Image 1 (tube, rainbow, N blue to C red):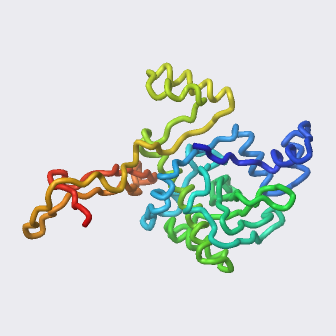
Image 2 (image 1 turned 90 degrees about the vertical axis):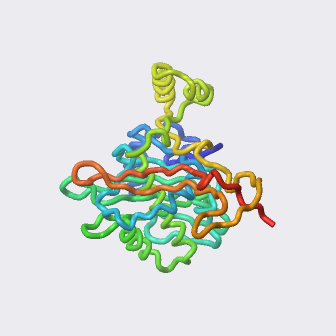
Length: 312
């Protein structure tokens, strides 16, 4: 499974010009754009990333955050900037029509019909007192511009006292009222995915595992604690400061194999077994309920003592 890494403006400059000598710090100073400043901060943090399993993406985009205050939003691990990476063109992030970038000079190009958001940089924005006032979300699309650079769009989600996370999402999306409902759906999914990955980091560690070198993955999965730490340290030395969110084992087929006979229902009792799909709940916890975590309810069979209904 291949995930899309973030390409900085400096990366693309080096690729297009062949100039490998210009330091990213000098490049950022010359460009003087918000995008390059955020990318420099990410580079200096050793380019941390989260690979989100395709089957988990849709689950996270469905999480209801109506009861969560917006001031509890956070970046995973309290990092200054993190890259949320997707695999392929996920349908929840694929554009059904063109969406042109508007705003300022570093939102270049557009997201063409059939393209998708493939990678996101989530960055903390601070007020004058040094507190986090909100977040920037840089979206990288799969449609390059005419000069080969990435199409970039930025969203700003500001925390607001008295508003829930869902209300802040709605407030942010209203800034793009000229775009189509489908484009606004994708922008909302971007916000929800990034925020829920941050919440997920506060919960079940089994859902998030360190990304290691491909040759070490099997040993990391079966080794003891010392072996795993050695493998993780080796990956960090090679520049892999990342984590995998979700895995194939989390997801069961939609319908187990049917069999048996069809009993007669008695009153309100279920007459067939059925599969309850895996889903998340956002739960507040900690002192003063000041933190949020996502709890994963794994797929389960309801009334396993009953047969599954056979389709006619």
